[in-house]
Length: 348
Ligand code: ATP
Image (cartoon, rainbow, N blue to C red; front, side, top):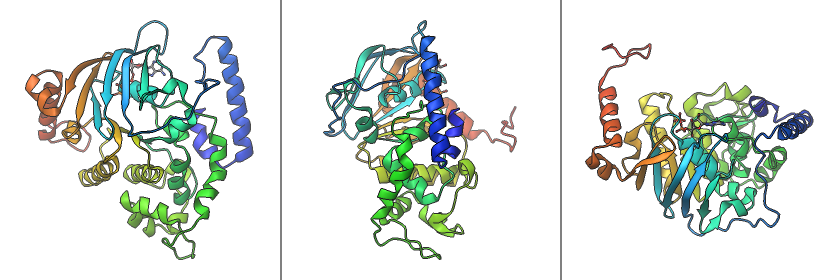
């Protein structure tokens, strides 16, 4: 069902009816004690940001009753600092991001942003203040301009499609119409052959994400339709759209899920540079697959079997000679081993 959301976005009515069915389905599932959608508390207040400090206090969480997927995880990210999560697949890295975005509430412990327990703030205020650059960016079959502006309003739906999120429904129906509000105030911006002007902020975001040049080469510039689920764009281009979206949204807190899939090295480096620039001054949590990208992180957590197995800076963890250090050596070895076009190591 989730996969249908992107392309259906434009068909307002059918979308809403689908959504209603989805909600009905969820009510039905409720009866069978499936997890309940997170709700605002009746007296929920908007989150007030003051620098963007993120604290996990003894956070435990289970998707299903039996085994905990996170066990008493505690860490603190000072305002504007960068925390990297590394570790084996299934360890719990994405779960940490999901909890911070409040797709679920912890079973135990609490998550605080600037001293406020996120369980007691409104979800809309929380999600407005958090930007996401997912691994795989789902695009709407809409214009490029729309796709960049979308994140300015709320990335919630897109994060769901990226794989680590859950569908967030409350705001999604309003998203298409509110694009107009964003594009209404047209600053002096790029104007394509058809004389369509593009919002200056959108263009500035696209420039910062190094996608503006590419966009101007498309037949209709910013008015080009990206095709069903963004089929007309490469993985790297889509990721740059996600970066542009985030720049436009300008959130104090940033969640990054680094791509595992190999983009070509030049592209990867360029994207890495835009991400670096975007995360400056924002409290950043990054799930890293290439350890070389997080050498400069203020702190690195090795997450394994739902627990923090190691914690420290790159230098500290290298010196400790534990899991992180062996992951690093492993990656060095892999980087030195030529990989043939079928993706298999040639030495094997
Ligand atoms: P990867 O690097 O492969 O993305 P990860 O460290 O991000 O892994 P998580 O996705 O956080 O790991 O998963 C942690 C554990 O929770 C895994 O055992 C996973 O199978 C389980 N899990 C994740 N999502 C769900 C879900 N929706 N329902 C039940 N179990 C889940």
